[in-house]
Length: 125
Image (tube, rainbow, N blue to C red; front, side, top):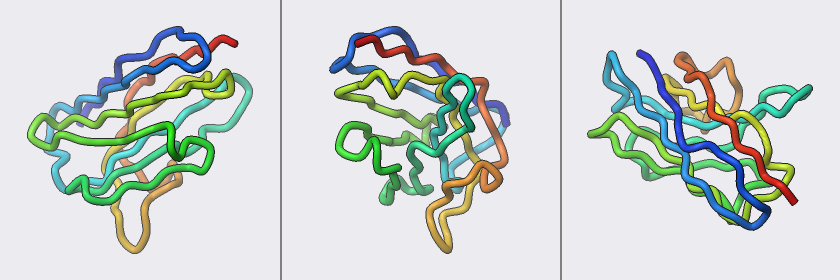
């Protein structure tokens, strides 16, 4: 399975962006999918995840109320709507798939099998 992320760009603080991640080469219908981000000089960190049906989601505290993850399983696509962006949201955002939701929402990189190449989000103050 290959993942292709897109939608990154440069915005001012308070702005919005919508990231997309399309999977090809296999079905991701039964997989949990997620978004991570990595800022320069920092470790990759969990941002959000969604279960196979889209009925359950999980977010890191710093993005709750601002970011929304969703998916269209028929299109093998996961989205990340990012509102009220802050300079500290600046990072390369990577999508991941192949996770398992049980016994809990996957939040670590080792819980995902497939990774996209990332898309850069830059938020200026």
